[in-house]
Length: 305
Picture 1: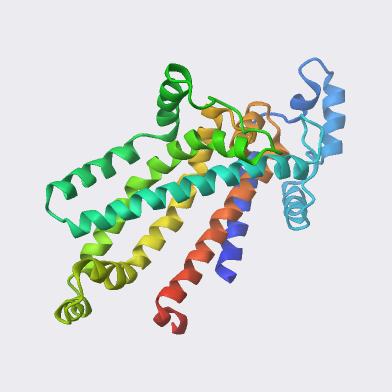
Picture 2: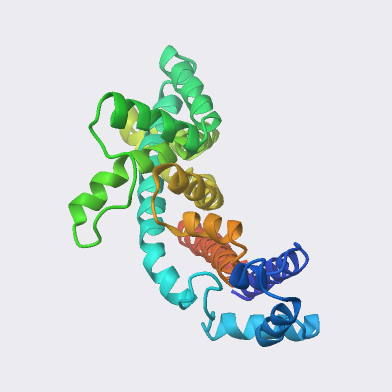
């Protein structure tokens, strides 16, 4: 837990430093290019941009920990309200993409290990190499061409009506598949490798000698003891999922955090950028903490180390 806090502080510090030395003047996002230098200077003073850098840093940390994110320079609304609206679309996409990756990648990895060195194994290994080489924005464009333009089965953009669950889920199918396929290949390869590493252990041999059939042996003894590397990979893939949501939301026009981040970067809305990057860092840090907790559950030896 302490290490998670340290990592989080380090991440938000890096965000602060990068934003402060990235160049550009946020007052131009508010006033435009036609205001006089005196007006720009007065606004910089109001925003605290003329203060010493260490004072700006401590003020930045204070706002983060008190959830007082301030207002968007461009949209003139509280950043918390922006996040609360956009985050639901990103959560839907990230969770759906992850579930699809698990539903595709892990079964393929299990089958490949069970059918190792056969044609089925070779086909699955080729597929698991192809999927990660196709980024979500590429797959998304192909899906839009096929299933929204040539065969108009699904809508090509939008997040759906907030009050209509089925409309949101319907519009989520193509983006979630684009993201899930990209992640599933890596998860499948790790599952196969971990299964093959476990399949020749002594306890598996004992289970077979007791007459346990092959499928039950694979699922009950091999897969269960191969979970730790799989969980590790799944936790590490969260960063890839978050990055993938940014590209996917732009391609499909979903009003999520990723699209908000890109728009904020283009408009130099620095408070929104800093808050979103800090939020992404927090999510990744908490996911690593969750992976450690799952470790302890899967392997009791870790609890006593």
